[in-house]
Every structure is written in structure tokens, then in C-alpha cells.
Length: 309
Image (cartoon, rainbow, N blue to C red; front, side, top):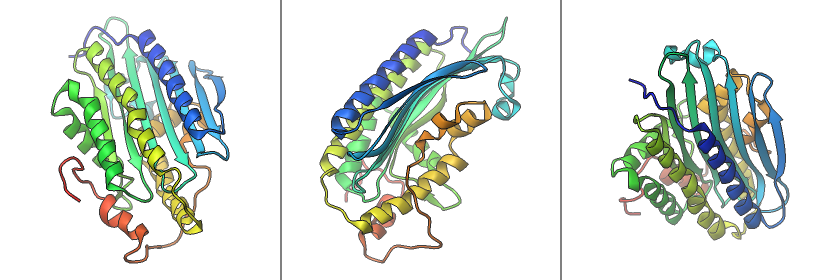
């Protein structure tokens, strides 16, 4: 049965806006050149958000960190088709979503998202859940980076039970999978959705832990790889692999599909797409090359915390 006590929307909103400021400040300091532009926007049918985008010639080619808090009298049929109990309810959806696309191909692309959804109808208990996670998409893989990423993901989950990291790590591997390519998008991390334990405060605390661990997971990898020399070969491979990122976001990503179906702001929803990308027909990497190693070692779900190189 749904809990009669809904999450504290005001507290969640305050946390997400503070997290946005924290992440943007840290990324600006790491970039060293560019600054985030801020775009406050209003949704005609209810709510709005604050989109912040950094683009330039520094470390990050494009970094988008988007806060949104949208609401409405009812969800469109396409958005509530898999949850018929939501039909006819007013709703609020708020979250922070970010995607970082670096210039240097040795620095991975990263993504994080934390969100909450609440649907209500007078005289009935609210329906609510939390979701989110973070995942890493390297172009040239390094075991120490993968180990650090997953150790930090495990640390985010540890206070909430020993079973949490393995469950949400496996869910991430399953979710960020391009079925039409039969390959993962990257090395995974954490993914969870529809989280409602019946205790909104505990679930909000878990969401905060995931959000607060993102910079701890990503920045050490950025700092380790950002000065690695690269040339046109590495850049070309990076742009080719970015095509997979675009394919996933437009075909499978729940947040993208929900945003577009619910009348969200298109510019903010599609900020996750990289500024430059390439596709090639039936391309395969040269055997024995660093590019082939990405496919052979890193684009396979594996237990990075226990497996030996």
C-alpha cells in the first residue's frame, strides 16, 4: 500500500538546487577557463527549472547540469501507460540531471541523476518514488579508474545495507545497455528507480548519498587523465563512441522520454547530447589496438571490486 506520508518536496528542492551549485562550482574550478551560463525557465503548464551549461575551450567541451521541478494536473497517457494507477492524478517531478563531455578522449564522459516523483489525488494516499544513479563512459579504459568509480558507488550505498550496491550495480549494467548494438554504454555504476520503502525520509537520505558521492567518484579520474596527450586518432574514436551515447539517450533513456512526453523543455532535456559526434558504417577497431581493448575488457559487465586484472 502507498505510504500516506509523501516526501518533503520543499526539502528535496532545496537539496537539489544546492547540489547543482556545488557540482557547477567544482567543475568550473577543474575546468579553469569556462564558466556556466544559467538559464532559468518556466514551463507553461506548470513548474520550471534552472539549466546551467558550460561550453568552451577548457577541460570540458560541454557540461550540462539541469535542475527541473515540473508539475501538472495529470500525466499524458503516454507517460502513464506503464503505471495505470497514475492516470488522472496531479503530479510533481523534480530532479537534477547532468552529463559531462570532456575534450580529452582519455577523460571519460560521466552522467548522474537524482530525482523524485509524487502523484496525488484527493482522498487517496500519494504515489511516490525516488530514482537516480551515476554511470561512467570511458573511451580508453583504465582498471584503476573503474575500481575507484565502483568503490565510490559502493560507499554511497553502504550505510543503507550490504545488498544495495550489488542490486543497483546490476540494475545499472542492465539499464545502460544498447540492445540494438548488444553492448553496454560504459562501465556502469548505480541505477535505481521506483524506490519507495514506505519511509520517505530514508529514501531521500539515500538519494542524497548518491548525489553527494558523484564528485567524489568523478573528479579524481578527471584529475588523473586530463593532461594525457592525445591526437586526431583518439579524438576521432571519442567522437565515434559518442554516437552510442546519442543512440541510448534518444532510444532508451527514461528521463529523456518522460521529459519529451510530458511537455518538458526540449533544450534542457537534450542538453545531454554531445556537441560533436560521428557515425561510421560497420566500423570495427583494429585488432590489438587500444580502441579494441575498450570493447574486449571494458564494455562487458564485470565485478570491478573483486575481479583481478
